Length: 162
Image 1 (cartoon, rainbow, N blue to C red):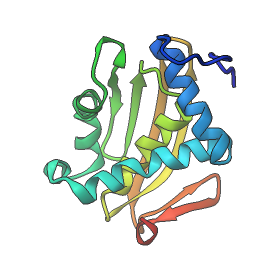
Image 2: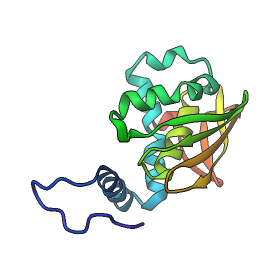
Image 3: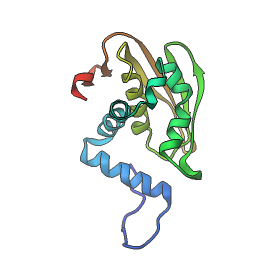
Image 4: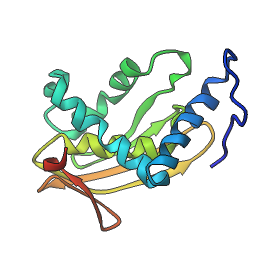
């Protein structure tokens, strides 16, 4: 991971993309690298669900992912925030394009956590399909079952751990 800012000076302004990458890089370094960053991203939506009724309007992950851009922009303001766009959607999968500044592992974790707010659903697979400088593309697949998150066979957390 490239560290964009090597010598931080008080009172100096830095490029927003460099700042986001520095912040997420620091989180990753403290929490076990990119896998740790993904775990932190995955905890955002379930935690948010505990404190807001906004997410109660969604009946399933498909509805949530269709409205994901509006939720993302409500939390990330400004012209540089980027966007989430649903490219492909079925009843049990979503392909989403992300033009935000965030590291792809963090965003993939965020999308995995979104599936986890629905007790009747479980994550089947998630992947970064495209990793470019201008955009990232993710594919998330879910099904019916116990809300335990498995990523490459490793238990990350379940609803009782949130």
